Image 1 (cartoon, rainbow, N blue to C red):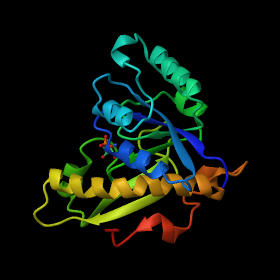
Image 2 (image 1 turned 90 degrees about the horizontal axis):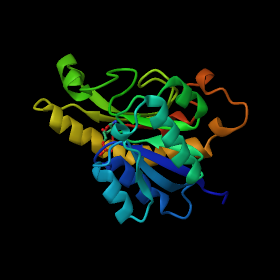
Image 3 (image 1 turned 180 degrees about the horizontal axis):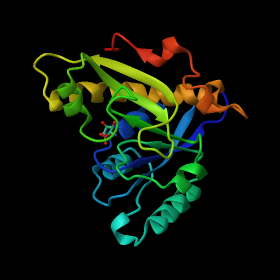
Length: 219
Ligand code: GRF
């Protein structure tokens, strides 16, 4: 097997997607290892969970850093310390500057709890219910400077049920997220999307469509 790529996970809170990535990366044949977890809030619960799983976890506390540049420089320094090759944002609630995103071009992924390009931004589940959609889901994509934009790697779909509340729908989508993110990261690392010279923006979905879509949802 080829060498595992070193992943840095960025979180802001609970870190349940982070846990799913840490667990997947334990498999000897998984193409990634989790080099570190970084949080922009010292109180992020995910930091404790990462340490309990034996993964180095560091708070880059945005409140202690006076400017966005200082915060992102501190983030970059930690990523360098842990020799991170690819970033996985997992519930990271801070918008990164275009300069930071450019430094990690095609080397930063994100998970969003909707079927992008629908329902970008916050309160996705309430807006999906308000819109009356019958299918919801989640997306793993390559990060671009615009929020929740970028080439889609994989999506998972779940049904919307008649008595859904935003909380119930969120829980159903989150269960799909936990399956999707490890799958999408693996697809990304293994696929030709990583080959030199590939222009991801010209190839929105470069991975096998069948593998990239879970419908019906995996149980
Ligand atoms: C997830 O729903 C993720 O898609 C969104 O924020 C939530 C984070 O949850 N960006 P967790 O911290 O991974 O538990």
